[in-house]
Image (tube, one colour):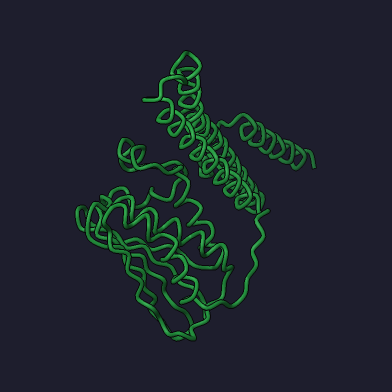
Length: 288
């Protein structure tokens, strides 16, 4: 009985030591957790607890890093238009308001920056609502031809400014797809505007390929393309392949992140094909 008691005390000491080491983050892997062979079931349970705890901590650390980076990016993106507007207004107040050669130019510049600021704030609200689960989706059937035709007409002037041919290839007139019509419109506007912005010549084409139970919506351009090494990152918030060029053509850096979230909310995924100097193709599926 005495020997049995000593053995149990030794085993309890082992367990206490292991738990203390876990609390102090002394273990890098679960393989470092070793108990007496008689406690194999308990050892297995502790290892599972350790793995779950470690994964939770790693996730929280990644989340904190993402939040910090996101706040830094937001601060930077907000600072740019605000400082620009401030500079234009200060110049006007310093006397340029009376100079007919520059006053309207400065006012138009300031106005453009307020539009960019408004777009950024709207996109930030969308991202926040999507990620918090507060964005309401109104699913239903809608005529995809009617929607795409309307969007094409709305974006035609933007394409015309760059001498880009905006071409819509109609699908079956009676094709009804299931989704949130307004959110799908937001997806298509983002994809089309990106395609037009990053194309210097040629065309942007919209098409629909009908399958048995779904249809694939495709936006294809003949633009500058995206290097393969960047394809996995283009849907990250504020990520830009060419920062200097992205700034010059405008945009909030959140469009593709919003596209990704909305498409995934429809149980689908955005697929990308691209080649430098040849163009890009974005596509996603919707259920019939």
